[in-house]
Length: 325
Image (tube, rainbow, N blue to C red; front, side):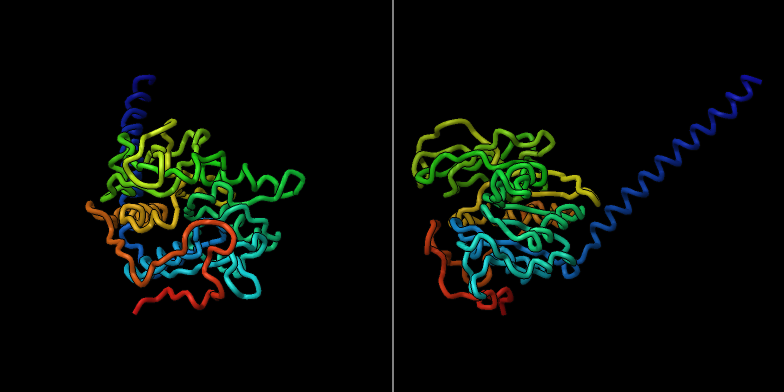
């Protein structure tokens, strides 16, 4: 009887394994089929801007125009406002964040914001939704509530968990960065058509990058603002992918510590960003081997980086056109 049971169980085990294998293959095929069928016009990407140094109020609309006019995505951009005018120096007001409730992706480029709870809630709810996210440069220190505030966890813990890195320090604004491909991940779809380039962004320290993050690009600190300067200090990761386990699902996350307004004049930087969004959305199969077309649409003529009144004055959100005829 013992041998008879074995004869019965063994074929059943093989059958179960075959069924599981077939089910796994079917699931994978269904996922691939679903990925290929994603229609950009059904996807709404919301850019949350608000940094008083790097002109995110100009670079993010430029990327939004590429996504909308060349690839057909729905896009919205939200700004720090004072009396209806774009004012990146206003650290406690980004209006219209309720648009995140029905959004499909959130892109953050903010710096040291102290938003009221009702505005902050839209951002944190989205992060917990399991939907894709991306961030640029100062989103490693997107918020600043202070040690004794109930939202103090947003200052360091939140960017570490969501984006993979909190603010540490940088190599000085008089310097710049040579950006190199991470050899171990050079075949990553985000890097298709991306070549090494020089960035005006000065290098951020990335000593505490989460272990599960996948490095894409490495930066070397260069003395001076122009290419060709001597390297100094250690290399650091400047672009990566991450997964954030939110309350309602796991989010694909793309992040780069680059983002000086001059960086975006280089097509490699624009390609990195746009393809990072595609990857986060699960649309990497739509990135060709040579990379996506990321030619600038409309006008991109940003004011210089810097604090104070460097930003363009007296502009309302409606003055920044996202549709290019």
